[in-house]
Image 1: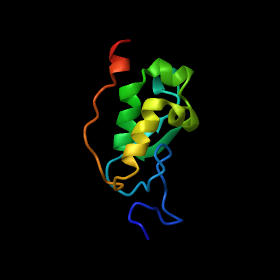
Image 2 (image 1 turned 90 degrees about the vertical axis):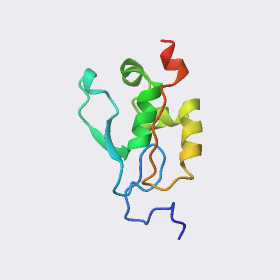
Image 3 (image 1 turned 60 degrees about the vertical axis):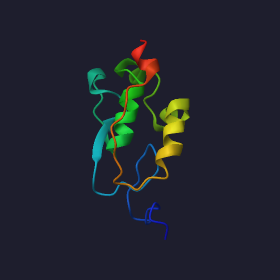
Length: 103
């Protein structure tokens, strides 16, 4: 089996689809806590950091509060294509998106 593929019982990251593994895991609120979001989902730390480097809390609340909406965004899609080749425990720092900096 390819080391980047998950076994059938292994949980997957809802953003990138890679096996979650046991290292560098965060929890993401699809609806930010600022806007009373309660449901949390396990997600790779690098994926979580990428989401928050691209979107403001308000953007997450208004537009990007589903996995499908997040995955459809160009910058997130490019990130997913890149991180898909990495092992589940991979982590590196994430820079804030230039688009977010201009807001």
